[in-house]
Length: 171
Length: 309
Image 1: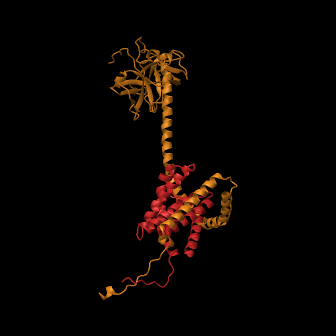
Image 2: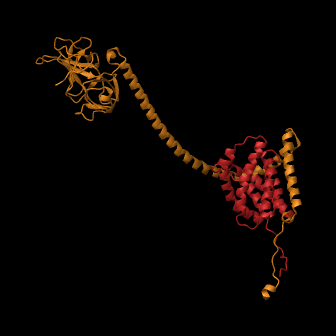
Image 3: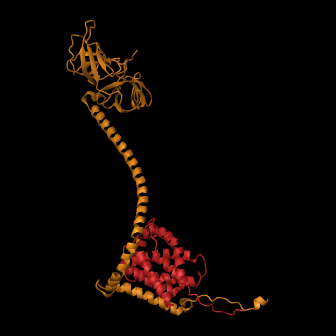
């Protein structure tokens, strides 16, 4: 468990740095991929709701620090996103092949909506048209493209250690 | 049956803390994190720029800076490559857009130039209409666009886009701001045929505006658009450079001409005489360029025309 937490902390540190320095500047068809969000979805789906929520909080905190934004803004959104996806993974989405793709698409939309609502609440300038019409479709597509490599990486990273299988008598 | 009865070994699925944790714990953790986030937002907003959270953010950001710089440096070549490719595609699409724009603007410029030329032509014709010489005809003058210019040396006619419906009749004089063009030889409903002054069939009673010497202007029968003022006696004085205008009456008689008086025709370029010819040989260069007419004025008159044979 401790190892997983350390891995997640390091993973989100690297991903947040990459997101802020490189990925955010990639603009294709008006949108840009959100590596942190996709990674969070992958971690939350595979590791569960509490892990997802804590990871989201950590990733959000890093993003807010790196971007010099309002502290707690991204943390709040990513905490809720990580928790919600974690719960989905624990319940309905368990072992479903389409869960990663569906989760990424839905969370991208909800994250954009949440960001917009938060900005309105905090009276920060935000254009709903730009966020939801101009940027969102391309962002969803780019996030979906990232889904498979990121999920593969996360599965590999959080692969349970090989140990002698426990034996259960079911018969 | 033996197989079903035997115990089956199954690997136990990995268990994660949150999956096995109770709902209370889950809600507690999430609630605390949300509360922490909201607290941070609130404190961050309320505190001064020197507050605890701002200081924390500043210090943390400084700590992150080296990593960001390192990531930027590592990614720079890839970013450059991406930027170059993106710029290339952007430049290509921009190039196409600009080409289309150039085409559209060229078209607009041509249309604008034509509009300006048209406006200038109308202005010039309007000036002519306001001249005292055409005062009687000012209300009946018709401005007409030239539909077709003379197509060959042997065809000294042109078609204008105005006809009987506009009050135009056969023998009406046709002018421009430069001078006399010819006369209407056929008037249809919406169009009319104008026979130019360079047609051998046309003869206009004209006079030297300086000396008053009267003659008949006709085409010189040559390849050029030169006219000559015929029937000017040797006793009359005509000099090179004199202005030739319509006389406004039939030569030698006091009958009214088809052409109002004082319409400019051309300028005398050469004066000569021979022993065998009783008249002077007066060459006139017309003011009007008959090959490039766009708009003309038809001096439509309401008075009845004399019947011509």
